[in-house]
Amino acid sequence: MKVILLGRPFQKMDEITITGEYYNNGSEVMDDAEFTVGLSKGLIMHQLGKHLEQYLVTVALGASEDMMKISSQAVGRKKNEFGFTSQPKPNVTCDEPFSFTIKNQDGYGFAFGSKGNFTGKLAYQFPKKDRSQSVFFDGQIKTTKIEL
Image (cartoon, rainbow, N blue to C red; front, top):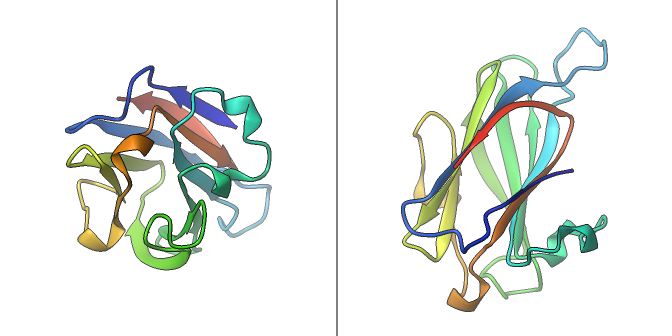
């Protein structure tokens, strides 16, 4: 698991861009690019374990074969706490190598997107007291660059 510790809350106008390559285990089809991206309010990330959904919001992503589209599913920490429990999302198109962006929304929410394409359907709000201080991601992905 890779973790970015911001050292401060994820603030208005902040963007995190993750650039990398899809991982493939030798099969003919590039279908192994599955990873998890999330925001956590805590700075002590070793407590995450395998239960990422307990920390604010996570989004599980998977690449399809052909056009390298990313589909996602968002999971909240507890039922109704963040306005959703498990909610399917539209695809985000990614190239190879991909560039994936987490963008702050109004200081108290965030959106996921690619190539500057952010839709309202991919945006989430969370309580002010739960502003994120770290970003984590995990999965079969070769990261080449992370920038805030």
